[in-house]
Image 1 (cartoon, rainbow, N blue to C red):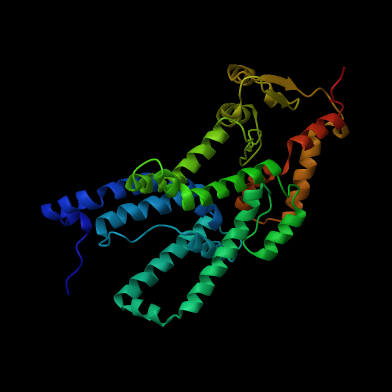
Image 2: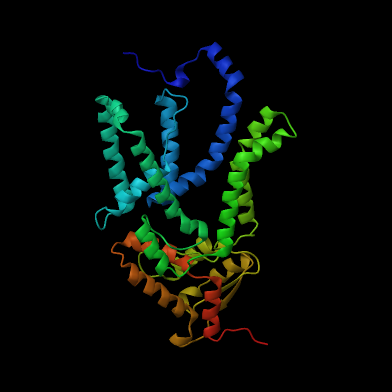
Length: 364
């Protein structure tokens, strides 16, 4: 039996000239689009699977490099897909208590790799023909619905989470932010732009330029939408949580740790004219903190001596503790992930109400 030769080893000059005349331009356009879309897509797949965002980058880049060397097909797609991310999420949810998600995913990847190697050795790929088309269509439809439901809270700006419909509905009932109208409008506009451009961009462009060039530029529509979305966020038209700078460590917070938080986490999110309000603690007053904030153009204010009933920070902590008790996490990593999500449960209006209740309302 002849083993297929990897594509990069086939150096026939005539074949490469034919490729340059026929498909090189389209491949370059596809490479540009995929390269730009790969990063947010891979991050989304990782979050869908319940893994850290960087896991999506590793799972997207490594297979591409490996297949370029070892593969033989010029059209097959490799890397994570939404369906696999959903299946991984279900597996991680059933993992042993106390085992971090990335450890479960590593074991799962090793097991699947062994099974795929055995399947290739035993030539079991022919068994796929035994699956009926209706079964495959039903599976794909169900997976698409499950994926869409899991991403619906993100689209609407809600803090609800869940990998199944019952979990999602339960989380939506208990969340403090069920909908953010501006975020929902932003997401809906992005989806509408993608749909319209995909269906009509090439036809519209064909009215003012040759059809071949219009078709080529029409394929860049997703890239245009992505660039526009990033530009809107960068310019600050849509607020996306500049006030959220969670930071967790193992142990108590002292002056040195707090100074590192200010310099590495808080300062990069600040802009000129921002006001930073801190609790009246000794660890918040060590040299370097005020200077770092002043260099970023921010003003530092301390909460004056107070009773616990008139402390806006204690009010926020009370809500955090209530949410953590309801979640009842039993691992440190799950607790840390929840703390990162809790920051999204505090709206600007709620924070203003905490300050107003403590006596810091507007005067004059």
